[in-house]
Image (cartoon, rainbow, N blue to C red; front, side, top):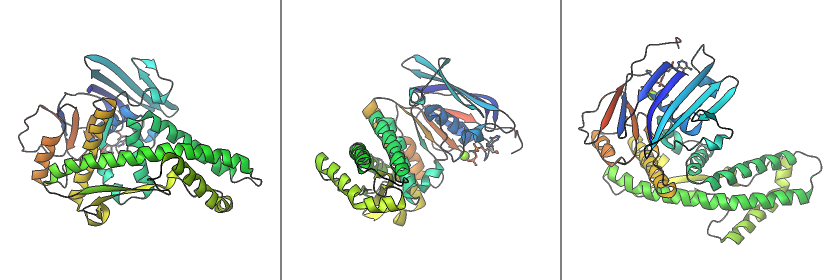
Length: 363
Ligand SMILES: Nc1ncnc2c1ncn2[C@@H]1O[C@H](COP(=O)(O)OP(=O)(O)OP(=O)(O)O)[C@@H](O)[C@H]1O
Ligand SMILES: [Mg+2]
């Protein structure tokens, strides 16, 4: 699948702008604050109906305007799909071929995209919720089952925490919630740990190509139960941990144990990446992970996602830059932003897009 073109109206610093893209590498170059990241953000929005940056939908509307609109034209095996997002202060409206889409889940994933953003560099040092969010976003692209169990678990957890605030607690009702939450967690735990294991195994290969060394990458998935247990024993272990923390849960009026506290650690030659890796090594690991996710999407759901690489060359030495360009998957559409052209001779078709925007809205 490729994104042929995009039209932005009142999106961030773009009043009214159109871009045409090619099948290979689209190299978006411009000085600081010209709108390179904004352009990638608009593509990511078309994919997920969310921004990857820490801002509300309203923050994406151009200053002094009331709405933004993103129109994208996709092409998959010569079949064209038109996507449109219109967001105003009143809400979000999504369209496929001009027809309104009722459920966001019917829109998300039509245009699959994997994004590398400089903000991802926080992944290793950030609090565990950032790493859980990473798994949830990426794994949801691969498994609708995962997403539906995760939504159900989140809903049950809220219900359990709200119920714990009552004066009189029915043990029967708590037990029904515990049972269902344990079922959801068994599925979520298996999928999360398998996903991280497979992802790091794949990323390990790309990391070795990129860095040209024998560094070994491994992942440890951290949770509250023993994952080597079989399904039945795993469910029982979850239920036992609810029993053990029940008094505490009633006192604190929230649920102590569960996959909502999980975390993972990536190890480089046995040591935590966050403690030993240089900036360039962290960036290389993240890049390898993003390429790994692309490969998993291709293998598991037979889709060719867009790869969005924002400011990817900073902190990489020239050797790694060249190797990165070489190992980028050949069959998918790629968007790279940078502040300069790079000297390396591409042996692939590259569409150079220079962005120079007039300052509008005076931000
Ligand atoms: N809602 C908005 N309305 C108008 N302009 C906005 C809005 N949000 C962001 N901007 C402007 O967009 C510009 C930043 O764009 P962007 O982050 O895409 O830059 P960039 O080209 O990626 O820069 P860098 O090379 O520094 O990463 C800034 O000038 C900012 O003021
Ligand atoms: Mg930027």
